[in-house]
Amino acid sequence: MALEEKIKKLVDMRAEARLGGGEKRIESQHKKGKYTARERINMLLDEGSFEEIDMFVTHRCHNFGIEKESYLGDGVVTGYGTIDGRMVYVFSQDFTVMGGSLSETNAKKICKVMDMAMKAGVPIIGLNDSGGARIQEGVTSLSGYAEIFQRNIEASGVVPQLSAILGPCAGGAVYSPALTDYIIMSESNSYMFVTGPKVTKTVTGETITENDLGGAMVHASKSGVAHFVAHDEEDAINTLKRLISYMPQNFKEQTPRVECTDPIDRMEDALNTILPDNPNKPYDVKDIIKLIVDNGEFEEVHKDYAKNIVVGFARFNGQSVGIVANQPSFLAGCLDIESSRKGARFIRFCDCFNIPLVTLVDVPGFMPGSNQEYGGIITNGAKLMYAYGEATVPKVTVTLRKSYGGAHDVMSSKQLKGDFNYAWPSAEIAVMGASGAIEVLYAKGMKEIENPEEKAKYAAEKEAEYKEAFANPYQAAKYGYIDDVIEPRNTRFRIIRALAALATKKDTRPNKKHNNIPL
Ligand code: HXC
Picture 1 (cartoon, rainbow, N blue to C red):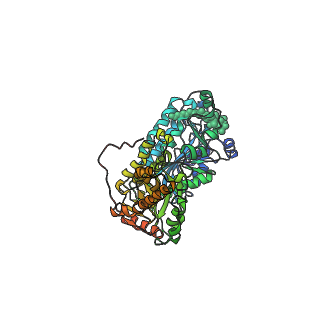
Picture 2: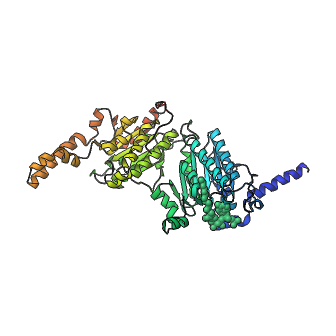
Picture 3: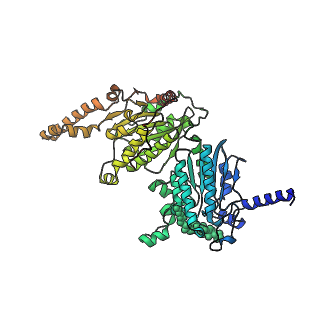
């Protein structure tokens, strides 16, 4: 065969591979409101940057007549390209080929790009849309999944791993995204569950729809499995792009810096009056976040889950940071099981990838009650403490208002190796709030007073005394636990300066195999 003919054969084979499962199935994918694997990659990567590999891989299974049905690429498109000029590796499951089901060879393709991403120190992005294990292949498909899981585990903390769920994701297949750093689910077409509605009905008798069992909002608000809900596929892809912009390529690199167009010494007078006069009144801490970060841009993570803590990415002077803030407008910003887990996971991600932490504190304490105790608030609260204590990235803490009890210690306190701990003059750093404290301290004295009016007067006096002594930041500042008390309107500038002073921070942990976070 002449070279010209050989080239034509190559061109034809490429065209065939690009059609995946064929035009009919592409049409059917579009009819469901879904994009194809390649269309998704094109939306994600810079134009013309995608280099596909393993386009000619086919399965080698001979069961159930599948040997007669074979497609170039075998149900997953893999390769590399750039997002805003930064390299990423990507795999995109092709539902038009046997429902994107995972075969032995399909898994090998995914593992190959994961291995390459690890070697190159480059993030890996998975676009998931699959009917799960290829049923005809049996155990080789299961082992393929396990090969992927093992790589997810090994890549954890080495390179960022992001997953978008853009179709079905069921059975054991859910565990690959679950092992990655962030999951984005498209609201329109995706679901995730270990066991689907049919088997659920058979085993437990429960009747439930796919969406109610494992839809995007369910996982974003109830289980916390999904970190982001996207309205549609475009939104999911755009979320991936924004997210990756905050992350370094790998754990050895510093966070990316973008040019900062927002004055670093911008004073925000509104911050001096933003807190309600009554310390028990709620406010939205996101208003404060938006006033201090570059251009008011805040990429909130887990927006709909455990709303009493707010976590997400922002920039100060162009540098990515992770923000953790108690949210007084939800459950008074107290720490409970879910918010502790949410905070801990986010902090550990930031620490893996050298993203400094900025913590805004307004916390009345841990949520009391049997639900919390039976659910293990002790172990779960310890996760948040552990995450802060083990983090070696720069840690800047600003106490806005309340910082009581154990929750004070947990929220990036000086003793958990907080680098710069600032407080607003409105800060109240104490073992507990005034009314609770005087009930314990003056229980005997109160009992002795019978007249209710006198009792109330006595209580008010003692409360005022307690507040004078403890409802302020100066007791903590006296001991150096607070490095400075700052004017609220200067908060942005003070944080930026602190981060600059910490830019060369080096901290180490004791030598060990690995730690043992209370899971
Ligand atoms: C082989 C599969 C497949 C699979 C779908 N297909 N899933 N082929 N193995 N797992 C094929 C279909 O036969 C069909 O082929 C094409 O993909 C599209 O599927 P449809 O059913 O027509 O599409 P839709 O109506 O959108 O339904 C999608 C679906 C459904 C909900 C995913 O296909 C389905 O329920 N599939 C089986 C899911 C499943 O039980 N998977 C195994 C889970 S256990 P044609 O030729 O008609 O286009 C598992 C274990 C993992 O994954 C363990 C890891 C440790």
